[in-house]
Image (cartoon, rainbow, N blue to C red; front, side, top):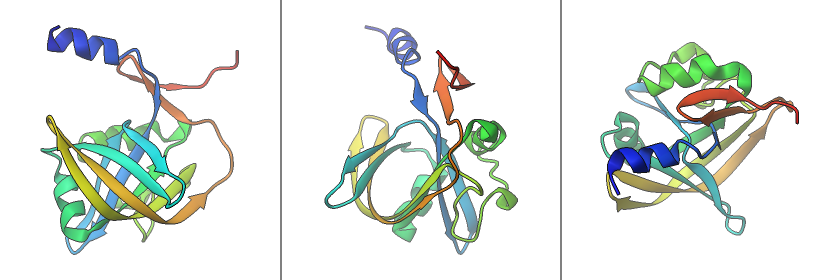
Length: 150
């Protein structure tokens, strides 16, 4: 199996889009992720995978906390900017949540596990936000998408 074949097969998996962020002495750090999931209800835990080269990862490690904002289909531009390391502070509130995100999770960093070229962050959820229900932003076949009615 080759890396291009593996990457091409993974592109067939549709996922939601979220932003992992942290606000620290340096300001705001944020990155777009599609590798976010719940891990446990009791205790409330989530899992995020970040590249070992991620600048946001290093800041989360130092801060010991992070937020996850689940994006709506109208927030594609935020996903694109954060994926390029160009998070705009105006898009985030004081707690480092993306404004008007579908849902948000405030987490303390519980554990890190290195696997391949990524680190798995396990966060203990200490607070949640739920906004009005809207369509989620999806990522499939290397492009952002919206849900379509069947």
